[in-house]
Image 1 (tube, one colour):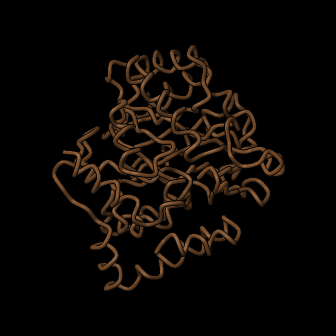
Image 2: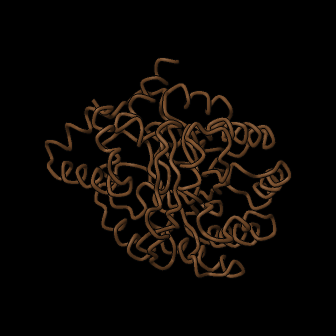
Amino acid sequence: MYTIIREALFHFDPEKVHHFSMGCLHKACNIPFIHQQIKQQFTVTHPSLERKLWNLHFKNPVGLGAGFDKNALYIQQLAALGFGFVEIGTVTPKPQAGNEQPRLFRLPQDKALVNRMGFNNEGVVAVKRRLEALQNKSIIVGGNIGKNKVTPNEDAWKDYEICFKQLHHCVDYFVVNVSSPNTPGLRALQEKEALGKILSHLQHINQGMRTPKPLLLKIAPDLTQEQLDDIVALSFEVQLDGLVATNTTISRADLRTNNAQIQQIGAGGLSGLPIKDMSNRVTQYLNQQTSGKVPIIGSGGIFTGQDAAEKMALGASLIQVWTGFVYQGPAIASNICNYLINQK
């Protein structure tokens, strides 16, 4: 059924379709009976799916990655679709419009997306108020934080501090995003010295809180082995609670989509099936180099239960979907969960 709906939706602008689809889900879930029906249809529970990590109880290991619900608008609705956790953001201190449209593109032949959204969000104050207003939150919520485009890199730590302090009481864990390719200069913050300053500062604040929150780092799939080794060393040095592997790639290698279309789309991060192997290699390497002592959320190219199981076999404790959600539809979490149950 979703395949037919997807074919129709794919004739329209991807960003408009996203807002339309989530708006429909939001309206449907405002009707208690329909909300309950959606929840019953898509929620899969089984003891083998449960995960205990960072003193948090995950009903299942399938999460929705940052960038889908940037402003914490749809948390309860996404919970009804059976996700084990939702990561909001990327959130920045000040509201920002992001890059000019069009900025989201489909590559159906590759089961991929290219985006250059540019951290478009309503700003941390608006997101905080929305999270505070949530009643009976039934799902684990992560806060993905970043810097504003106008903030110079030498002051980036200040932006991360603002978001961290503002959201500390209303998210369950944090992810520091320095790996998006769509904010100029941001990826330079992945270098050890710059990154160490940001993470050690946040960890210092964190440890001064009554209840410290898990602090994770999201990395790019394009890092060299030397850079990955620096990430591993830094993880132990600042006592990171985990890593998210990986963000989108700037590579366009081995795509089926014709080169003229790729050139026309231009810059942006590539996500989806083409980055699965790249993401898997990074996940496996990080798991080996940390001896499994730093939990990994695996992200990149997960469409099926088999993809998820493969990622977890390589060392991921939890997984996240994003592009797979667009291509596979609202049953993606339940389908993955059912597959994982049957593997036991």
